[in-house]
Length: 58
Image (cartoon, rainbow, N blue to C red; front, side, top):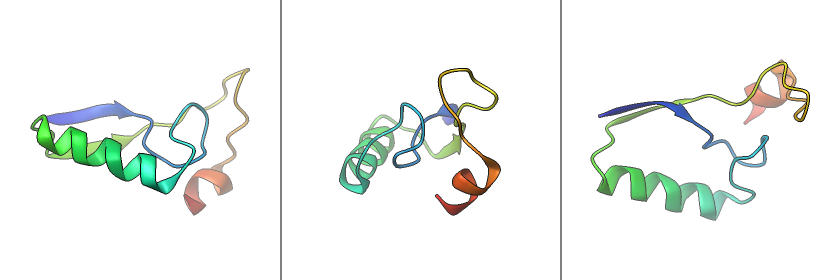
């Protein structure tokens, strides 16, 4: 299965706050049969100010 909407990037919008939590989420996804993930942080959202550079670095 391919997850095409996932907030897996660390400390970007409502994603995990630590790398350890991100890794735990990735392991859970693998356990559930996910083979690929598309990281999809919010863009142009009034609650989150994710610049291109911030997302690129993550």
